[in-house]
Image (cartoon, rainbow, N blue to C red; front, side):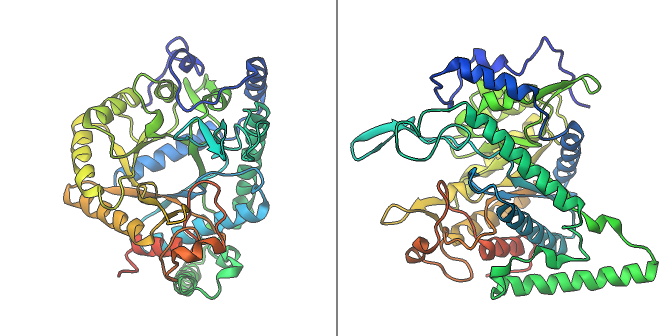
Length: 450
């Protein structure tokens, strides 16, 4: 049973009385307030029943009865809010989930890093190029990537543009799903045209053929169509970083007696903003959504225990997901003590492995990349550590794309540092391409080994 929060105990703007890290400095405060007020009157992007449905699914995954696949861009951009890009993201999530269902023999919950992942934390407030220092680019929700003084001024209007792009994205996804795009009877809808040559595509098509033949057989024998195979729910997630944006779409629903963040289904808080006395934890404390907490090498057992007690005081199932990101070389030392610490608290949590962020490095020429072998190594270590400690790794959190990019090295094609420049499109962090993402899915499903 969720905790009912009296309106006097918490408010969507109560975070403003605390220190808020990673927030942009808006020069026009009156315009920011006007935009937040306008956004608060606009229709929500998600609904409370969708949020509650996802929480129930996460609770199921916490019990080991499902697996969560969370994937998408490191940072969405307004320019890439196109039907083609959205369809490609949906296709790769559907293909990966189908492979994982086939291999793991359990439901897969699909959560896209989409429809709101427009703000990014930065390691420094400013950026210097050729002797010129300007505010850092904080994502399309805040300012513009061009390196000019005008581009880098935080613009409240970008908040409205982000809301519009997020709503367009999620509404298009819903239309595709409701229209039969995810129907197992027609998996050809999911094919990405450029990968017909890929060995991963060939393996995937063999799996699809096996599933389709089994489905046809069962429907023929029973005389009934299995309608649940005709749709697949896709949930949206983003880092709840820009607190004015999150606040504006947070609604109190009398019939449920709870506050909901209706910009998304699943917001998460990063370690850079997870201070116990900070504004982000205060904001996350009051919303009813399932929430994620990023966990890295700097996380202590006391910190993680206090976060869980603060954010889930009633030990509500489905509420907390812990997304750990240590790096391939550090996970076996750092993860076990945190598993023990969380167990002491008594709260159900979903453990999710993010094998991307702890394995970011730079090439000799300064290009950010990730080595596929390190990504797989951390993921395999995560499964091994959880199993050895009687825990359950119930999800994976990946930065990936359906585009034909060359941003991470390694994988089936053996991409090298020299290949990166061929199709490096990310403006922030490197992503897995189709073949690499599918190989990860097959390894999770136990269908592929070294």
